[in-house]
Amino acid sequence: MKADRKYENQQQFWEQAGKTGYNNVIFSNSVVANHIVGKQNSTALSVAKRLGLGEKSRVLELGCGDGEFAENVLSPRFQHIDAFEQSASAVEQARLRSKGNNIQYNVSDLTTYDFDQNSRWDGAFCIAFLHHVKASVPAIIARLAKVAPKVVILEPNGDNIIRKGLELLPSHKSAGEDSFRLQELIHIFEENRYQPIDIRKITFVPSMCPQPLFPLFKKLEKIVEDSSLLNRLCATYVIGFQQEANNPE
Image 1 (cartoon, rainbow, N blue to C red):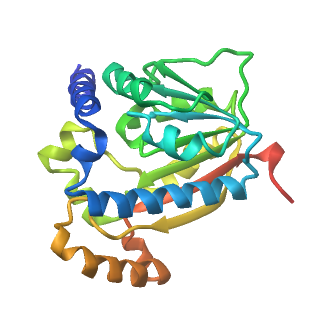
Image 2: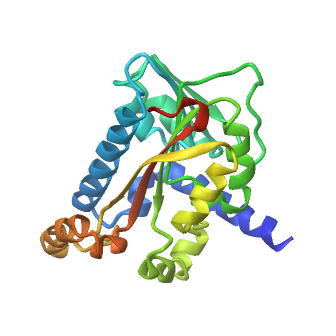
Image 3: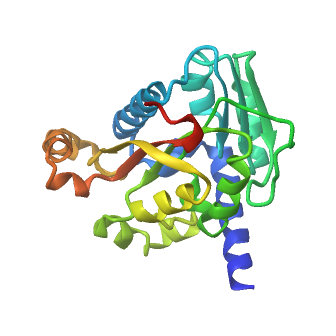
């Protein structure tokens, strides 16, 4: 019952966030938002390219939110996108502002949704989605494994003690923030015949960084990302998974 109540509260939070705009909820200002989102997007595309996904690929996006990633990142680069999101208000916003004719938005609760058994996609994207539905992730990935052999995920770094501390704050609890440790994620995917092909650690600028401190954190970010010792402090993992039968030589 407690878990159900937590999920209901989380749904209410994201329904409201879908109306006001996700970036307005997550980031302190547009400078920080543009920097972090830009780096996340470019890294996700780089990992997708490593997996062999390209302009002729049909892809899924799970947890598409208000459609920003599907519209601005996926639509110009892939043949067709099927995007799923449980927040009706977010999907309504996505449809209203959509200019791409190659995106199909769907309102679905992915904790219970099962794909049509005859459906197939070349790959899938899960951008900062899985940690919001952590208890349901094993079931979600088991269903995804039947329809998409390649997956790009972007998730907060649950091995970072600073990140885990932030998740104790009311603002993070209301959004259902519960980040994964890297090995937790890898284990879930490996149970469904996926292997990690590309693992990257990125971003150090805090999402709520005050704009005057942004130049300092941006300089520190490059040092942290480039250091094999310090990059454990990065805020984000981007991982490319591919099912074993399709592994490149």
